[in-house]
Length: 179
Image 1 (tube, one colour):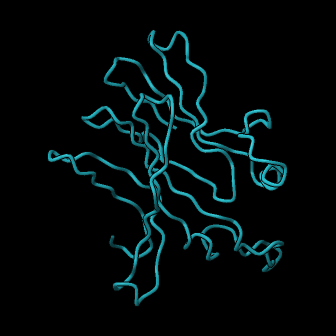
Image 2 (image 1 turned 180 degrees about the vertical axis):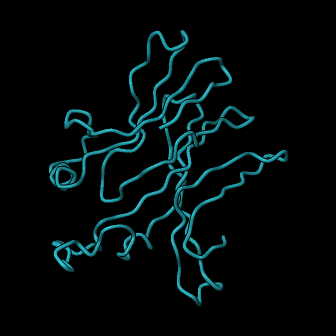
C-alpha cells in the first residue's frame, strides 16, 4: 500500500493482506467465530534497516473485523514529533442485502449503488515507537451535511499532511462535492 523513509533512516511499508488464523488476536471463542465469518484481511506495517535487504516481522495494526479498513497508496506520514500517522477508511457490509437483487441478470449492487458506502468513516492509526505498537484514534470522521439537518455522508480515501504549526490537515472523498 505504501512506502515511507522514516526519520531514523529505516524504510517502512504498509500493506493489507489476508490474515492467517494463528495471527488473530485471542479474544475468546465467540469473537474468533465471528471473525472467521468476516473477510480475513488486516492492515500491516514492517520496516527495513538495511535498504530493503531484510525486513522486520510484520506488525498487525488492525485485525479483520466487522469494519473493513482500507488505505490509499502512500498515505502514511511521519510527523515532526516522530509519530507515524496512517489515515485509513472503513465500512461494514452489514447493511448490504445478501443475496443482492438482480436486475436484468446482474447484481444491482455493482459499483457504489448501495447505501453501505454512506456509512464509511475515516480513522487514524498512529505509532509513537516507529511502528512497533499501534493505537487507533478515539473516534471516526464523517461528514455532517448542513450541520446535521441534511443527514450524513462518508469520508473515505483520506490523505493527511502536517501543517507548519503542527496541526493535521486531512482531505477525504465524499459524495457532496465539498468537505
